[in-house]
Image 1 (cartoon, rainbow, N blue to C red):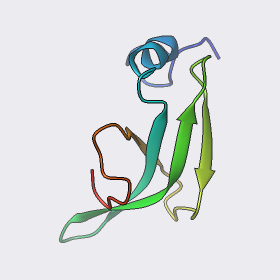
Image 2: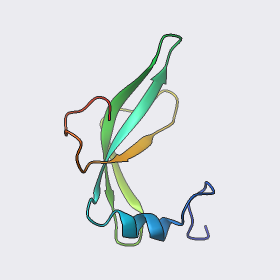
Image 3: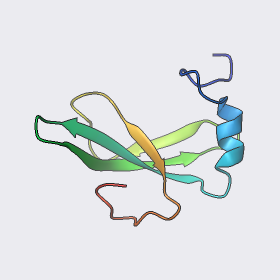
Length: 81
């Protein structure tokens, strides 16, 4: 990899610099239905100094997709950010 995230957003090192105050991230899977989307918390991630993540999952999403949100200001037992 070239040190950047896979999307066209900011480089991973910029994400690391922005998130140094909050090194813990909540991991969610988003379950889509016809009525609404449901966010389910499935784990926690920790940001490393080099911008990489350690991710610990309590469940595996059927879709294979994960969504990370910074924990700062979010209740730790939150279902939806």
